[in-house]
Length: 423
Image (cartoon, rainbow, N blue to C red):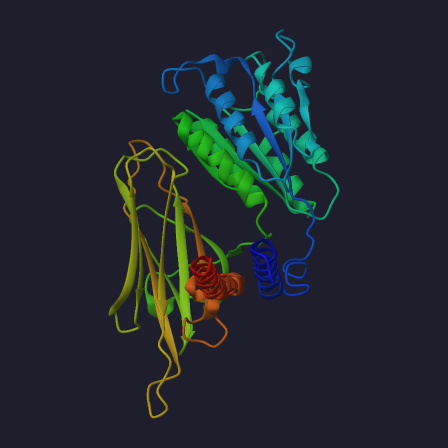
């Protein structure tokens, strides 16, 4: 006679076998993604004397930077190799030649020991000069080697004090080497000269510039840039949007960059086949001082001007990048349909930024447009449209396992009741 313990053990073994056999087919996990080279990021922090200024949410610029670093270090993806370099952290004297050599690697680029990195950052105190150019040259050397993406995130509150080594020319030289290194810059409560210099550095390597007035902005933006390094490398393509859809460039799936002046409209065209879905997003960055209360509008319209769908976002002065997106699924054609198989969709990007007094309105603000044309939800095999991706088999396994478990448990319960009655 089968005992209850042996029956329960058999049921558990059967359920485990069902789950393993259905949910994890041989090779499914191993073949999911190929091994990729580790991305590298170096955070370059200005520790010059001006970082003592107490104008970020009632605290010093240095305190805001330390808090941001601590939170970013906690959230850094495991696959990212991260390092930290300082400029102006050690020399307190007035000798310009010595001050312009004051840059050192605080934490080497490699696997991250969060405790060690935080301890190193905690020792920093605002000290000396602002040798941005020399620091960028050294940071590029720190990131040398490897096949993964490479990114420098420069955080500064002032102009380089080591001319004639122009940091903008340094960035251009780095870009000319073709090593695929991107420099993103963040200006802490910047003046016009600092903003221009940091924007120039970022533009030279295809990076981004962000003006920072608050601690949350600094933490969020540095975190975004570090996480971006872990994304697959996509080289943005420069494109020149038009003032009307009829003259707009036709785009394929990809990442595109443009510039948009204050209050300007930019138009682009995308061809969408029947049964496909257009997914697109846009970000417009305020790389100079702007008035509060602004927005970005992204519209998909027909060539005849009829609106299909729109996405919009607003800001109030506490962020320098506004992003929005939209999706448009084009239905499959009926067999007897006489409609054209493809449709030209016009994308319109409009912003409501306005410049503060004395701020230049040209060139336009950086615009980043992502276009993705994929098989629509009703296309065979596109299970990802339901938000499950390749994990559909796991859901199916759980449903089937639950069904089998319910049947077995019901049978066991009936057997136990029968045994109890006979006793």
